[in-house]
Length: 154
Image (cartoon, rainbow, N blue to C red; front, side, top):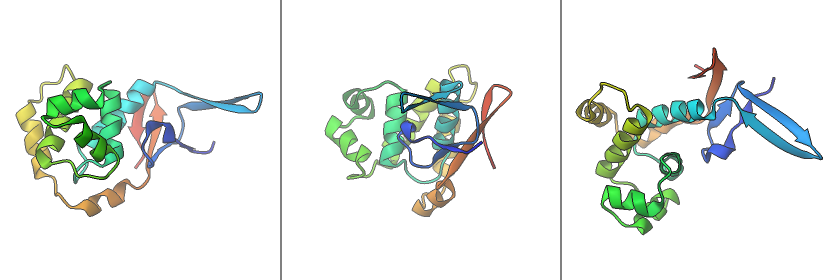
């Protein structure tokens, strides 16, 4: 089966090796993704631990997964909704502080039962190299579903 370029996520680099079905009705293609919440959790965990600052599309993916408006996210991060809008359009760069806080909030959302402390997560994020070329290894990310669980393909 062919891989599916999952552009509906809002991210350009997500591909699915399996775990989806494509049907066609009256010339219209429809995609059904098995356990879409599990897939979004795996994408989210990858974004939390990626090197460098979050891109605009990554910020938007996190914000929409959290079901926040730009205004709500702005209030939580201590900025204006216009700032969030500019980040999402890649017309501004998220600050390191806002980036770390957004990742911690998203981690807590994805893992409410986790024993890991926010302090430990912030330390891990702070230890990541802040080089923008780190995104090169994230040009194409492939996920597959095995035993009803999404995993990143090496």
